[in-house]
Amino acid sequence: MSVKSKIFSAMKQIAEEQKVTLPPLEDDLSLHETGFDSLAFAILVARLEDELSIDPFTVAEDAAFPSTLGEFVRAYENVPA
Amino acid sequence: MSPPDIIALRQYLGEGPKDRSISDARHSVSLTGIIQRSCLTGRSCDLSGRSVLLATSGQLLSALAMIELDGVARRVLLCPPDLDWDRLQVLLEQAEIDTIVTDRPLHDAGKYIRIGIDLPERRDEGWKVDRATEWLMLTSGTSGLPKIVRHSLDGLAGAIIAEGPARYRNATWATFYDIRRYGGLQIFLRALIGGGSMVLSEPGEAIAAYVARLRAGGVTHVSGTPSHWRKLLMSGAAANFSPRYVRLSGEIADQAVLDGLARAFPQASIGHAYASTEAGVGFSVDDGREGFPAHLIGRNRDGVEMKVVDGSLRIRSLRTARAYVGAEAPPLADAEGYVDTGDMVELRGERYHFVGRRGGIINIGGLKVHPEEVEAVINRHASVQMSRARSRRSPITGAIVVADVILADGTDRERHETIRAEILSQCKDYLAVWKVPAMIRFVELLDVTAAGKLARSDA
Image 1 (tube, rainbow over the protein chains, first blue to last red):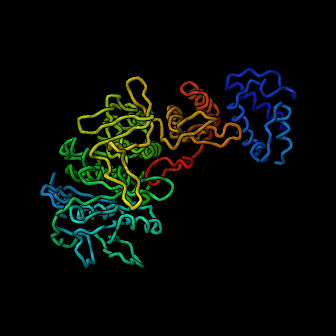
Image 2 (cartoon, rainbow over the protein chains, first blue to last red):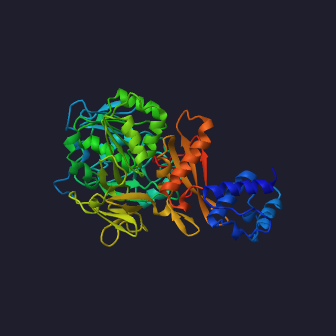
Image 3 (spheres, chains in turn yellow, red):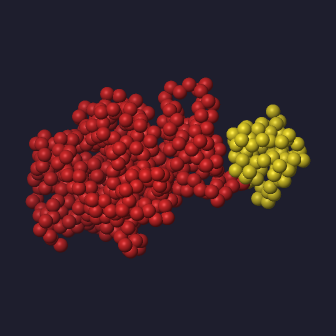
């Protein structure tokens, strides 16, 4: 499974747990429009760290938090595991 | 210095049945038989008025020395078994110790007088009981150097005297605590003052082995922390053991552990008590429910006063410690004499519930949660034996809550995902959304500290 599909699958799981209705997941979807609040993102980042052994937002000191879903996925794809 | 009404521990030896004893796995000592006996060896000085460190490898010798030194020494510092010599040095200075009573070899006692200790086979020196010995204990804080807390025997025994010590005359006591810590010392004093007997644990003894000795020794009254009791329930050692009196203290007794004990010991009176090294014994709750009735706030008939300020429980009574000891020791109580316990409580209906320690709060993007309140909900699941909620760092919210859970023995691996979903849904029903664990990990073991409390490395 690609990094992208792992991320999407984790997001769907969290959306279900948090009773959030996700819009169709597209690269240019802004993170705000996903319906996830900061807690949901915190859970997502922690679960992805366990699954992928990467936390791109803690590793890089100057990590800017992405604003779109595509940027979010690329943050994971660009970090060597 | 010598009020005429000082009652020292040795004066309680003659109370109760003639066959009273205190024992560990290797020795049993008759409590009535040690009147006028001494356990101290190689003595070169009178111990009257001395400041003594009591550091023995096992609990039995400490128990015997406490009886012998109370009313004689100026002060006795009880050294718990897990304290290393290097850290002890600083504490000896703070406590102005001049004499060390120990069964261990001391290569370099330095300026201290060393006195050996063994079973009480010699005649005692007939020391006069002429003072109220100060009892010094160490706090069980997990980080840094422990603080030294000063008690008087009156204060330590306050709750025992208030209940009427003769109530437990035929009891044989045991505790999962070490008697050199507050919770264990309470049980030792209950046995001694109340005219009962006691069975002590051995260093490092497995819980099943200890319980087997409790059964063999006819133990009727047992105390420990909720973590001790969960461990016992998990070990399977509870079968064929039927104590009459089961007490929990030292940590929050949640409904799950109270119910678990009620099922395991249907004949027993099961209750939980609130006590701490600093605040002494506050109260006990015997209705089998978690938390405590709101009417205990205020002044109760035993002279214990409690109030809640900024969410934390404050206690004022003659049972609290007198002071912290040491040159730069902070005050133990506020100007009005209240000790801030640091235990946070919440009023729900007619009852206060403990929610956690003030220092243990997890901050999730500004929203607060106590790990203990999450654990209390997780522990309600029938397949859960024990759990620990903890903080996990997050680049988004600073922290999130995650939980480690021990499942009941023999839980089918296939059911893990179902159980995880059930625990989560239970948490969602009872907790605010940020308090629900983001992840639940099933583990085989959770660390328990030397003081019998669930280890909280992030607290």
